[in-house]
Every structure is written in C-alpha cells, then in structure tokens.
Length: 403
Ligand SMILES: *Cc1c(COP(=O)(O)O)cnc(C)c1O
Image (cartoon, rainbow, N blue to C red):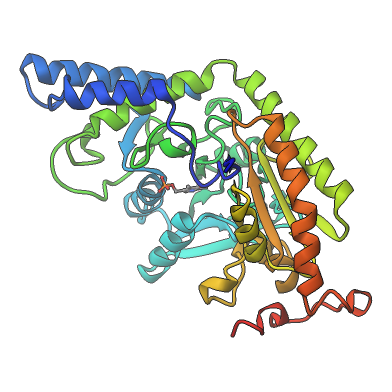
C-alpha cells in the first residue's frame, strides 16, 4: 500500500547525506574527541565544524552552542540552568500555557523548588498578547521562555517584539525553537534571543541530538555533572555521529530555505483549501498567517481526531491528533484548550504536518480519501444526527461512549 508521511512535527526522515556522514563517524572515524591522538583529533575537528554549521544557521557564534541529547534536554538546561544561576537576582519566570511538555513540566518542577511561574494565556489563534507579557514582568523576573512556533497548531509568536522587550527590561529571553529551526529563517541577533533550543530529528538529523544556543555573557549553571565537555556546561562524551549529522542537516537546511518554505506552504495551502471545500463543519486551528509553512490543524466537528487518525492510517496516511481520548485520558491537548476550544471541538482535531519530500500527488491522495472517512465517521456519530441542536458542553460528552 501507498504510505504517506504527514507527521513532520513529530519527527522527520534522516537525510541520506546526513546518515552516510554519521556512518563514517561510527565505523571509521570513531575516536573520542577528548583523546590527543589522531583518531581523537579527527573527531574533535568534526565536532567543531558541526558547531560552526549550527551557529551559522541562525547567526550565532560557534562558542555559543552547547550540544545536548535533544530538544528536551536543551529546554531543561535553559530553564534550570538560568534559574539556578540567577536565583539571587529573582525567582520569577514567565512562559505560556501552550509550551511543549519539556518546558511545562520543567516549569512545574521549578515551582516546587521555590520559583514562581506565570503561564501567559493565548488568544483563539494561540498567540500571546504583548500587553499580558508586559503586565506579567516584575522586578523578580529573571527569564521569559516563549516558544518560537507551536508544535500542534503551528502558530509563530511575535519573537522580535518579545526579544526587544526582554532586552529593554534586562531579562533573559529563551525560545524553544525546535519546530522553527529549518522551517523558518532565524537570526538571534536581529531577534534579541538569549537562549534557543533545537532538536536534530525535527529537521532531518537523527534522534537523540540537539543543541542549546546560549548568548555570550548569559549566566547559566550546568545541570549534568561530570567531565569538562562543552565548556563545562554539559558533561559526557560527545555524541560525535549525532553532532556531525546535526551540522550537515543545518547546512542542508540553510540551502534554499526560502524555496523549500514556499514549496511546503504551497502544498499545505492546497491541502487546507481542499479540506475546507470538500468537507462541511471543519475549523482550521492556529493563526491564519503567522504559522509554520507545513502545519495544518483542523477540528472536524462531531467526530474524534483519534478515529480519523486510525482510519487515515488504514489508508497509509500518517498524521497526528490533539485528542488523547482512546489513550484513556479525558483531557485533550492543553494547547487547544488554552485557545478556548471546547472539549468536543478539541477532540475532533487532526494535525497534518508536511515536509520537503512530500508531493502534490500525496496531497491529492489525502483529499481523495478524507471526505469519505469523515462522512462515514459522522454517520456513526451520536452527535451528528442532531447537528442542528448540537450544543458544546463540558465535560466531554464526545468521550462518554469510551469510559
Ligand atoms: C519535539 C519537541 C521538543 C522535544 O524535542 P526532543 O528532541 O524530542 O526531546 C521540544 N519542544 C518542541 C516544540 C518540540 O516540538
């Protein structure tokens, strides 16, 4: 059966050039970068070249890059590292209610350690309001951490304005840019970003590698202790194959970025237009313009995203949903709820995320199969027959037949 991958926000295929380079650093150039012999020097050189390539992707300097095991670790290091190093200055952190769990759960942990966290609300498009951010700042605020682009609905935040405000107030600004790196141009100087997290597997490098950009002069405490790797900021023998792959992926991402963005956006817009035209009672979630090029997130009213997902999978199409109904949790995505969606509408959500290797034929195939799936599911839905009288209610009547 034909298989179509529309889940690029979950992970991406490793580029073949990246994989081949990684293989070389596993089987031939396998030295430890800390070793003084030629094998070690060869590995060290490759690590430092990768650092330059990563830095060049968003106008940072190589010595401002710390390699980590991925996006989650980069987020942990940014938040805990800044919090611990600056606690004498203040104990207040500002973030949003729509962050990835790597930020959310780290903030909850820091709250238990005596820090105070403000979770900014968002509007119906998942945008923060600058007014709320201004009002949240106190003389105890040491860090603002706001994601560049949301992983579920794709909304891109006003990063430049946030960076400017943080700079004026002398507060560090961290952004979880895991979804944006490789999908959006980024310049940390222009945007006044002090710390930035990225993850290799979201832009065609491998899983288990990522990085944290830390502007020179930012006070950060290490959270993993051991050897003196990564300028004492992240102990542990470097993941050399992962790092060289990350560097290669950064170089490839930079090449023709605008062209790739335009291509992916073209496919995505065709997909959105097709869904809206062919299927009634559908809502597009996320900001209409300020969103990631490959992201489409819909709510199909009267049905569950999970059922839709399983039916698409039977047709070979891989997507994702914002509903956790079948996994036994009553709560749909915190992001969709923060945007003000009712439980029913949130449960009907489907995330389709496109990448550079997708084709127009794949979009056509999706548009060919989805109307009949939606119609069939709706015909079985207890909510659909009475659509005219449908009233959203909480908690979650869409879930009752499961629980
Ligand atoms: C995927 C993702 C992460 C986590 O990165 P891992 O490398 O999978 O740990 C963090 N934040 C966002 C926005 C993500 O999309």
